[in-house]
Length: 135
Ligand SMILES: [Cu+2]
Image (cartoon, rainbow, N blue to C red):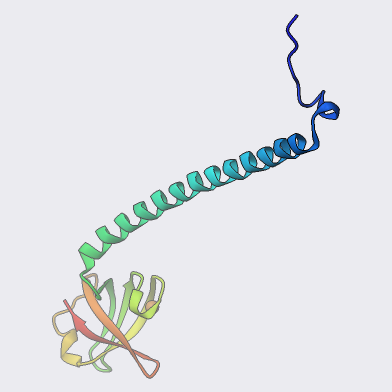
């Protein structure tokens, strides 16, 4: 009858160095498994990031570089103020919201009507958010 060596049952008869080798191998296999799993996770995260990028690129295409899309809610030609419901303004790190802006030139408001969707560029000048350009 052929005798099958089972290391778990026969560890007492195995030389010490062999037992250590078996333990080390188990640890290495566990480490490799962990790395493999981590790699699969990173690939998953990278794929998700790529998808997000595609969405951003599509959005940017409709906005042009540093301009943001907004809808005109209120126009005050007297004071040169414009209320917009705007999308995220990347350059100002501002989430989407409805707010009042000052315009650089009151004449910029002449062509606008409530409900218009515009592209605008806003800058922070000493805490005052000013629209410098409207398309
Ligand atoms: Cu805002």
